[in-house]
Length: 305
Image (tube, rainbow, N blue to C red; front, side):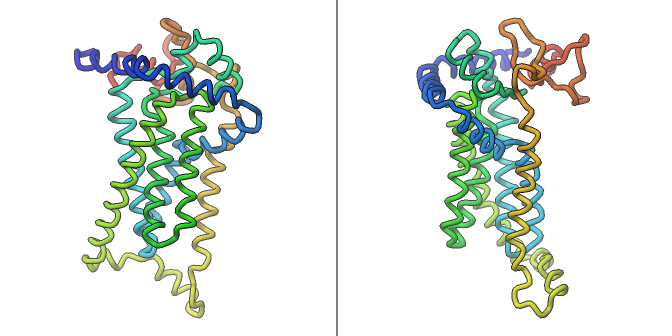
């Protein structure tokens, strides 16, 4: 590993020590609240930041771009997800290299009891910042600004509420430090704001370019129902149903995740890695018959992040 990466590798440790008291105070707060009902609720809301939900939402954004009335929303979603993903997963996580709390706090009996109490969920990447929180806030901020600009205030406030609950769920489930989710909140909000203004800019460009402005799938629906004054009255319901479907596709498989029986990374040097082992991914084949998480598979194969 080159000197730059060696220097970067210490950043996660510095974050751990700098925010230790704050992070543990928040863990105590959420740990004291643990109960079956809140655990179930947390597992529901954490799904809104899962990539299995975010990727279909990006595809939905592409579809929305094909309709003039929803083009602003579509571009805002696409830009928000792209910016947030690049900043979090491509830039900050590989730079910080912060290890998950269920690996660094294995010697803390209280934390370990809380972690087991909420189902021992695990991820396969680094901890800082929280990707789920970034995803939730990037989409929420972009949609909040879009709906506010259209004076739909009652709907607009739903999105930040969902994002806040998603953020809290990550700490409640003990898979992220509070400092992880706060950084994710900042990145997500910034990504959403930038995406909103970029979407407005792109929409203006579409209006000025005749060919681009003519792209509007609404015309197809008009041809299908010429007598209906509002031929798109079902479009909101269809979008809502699509979002619900995306959520269920992401949430239902998560019900079987975690637990002591889950397949964990085989790495056991500085700690017994509790990260999810990469099982069915051809990119991360077994090493000497053992399965590893994405982080330790790359380390053992000399692959730099």
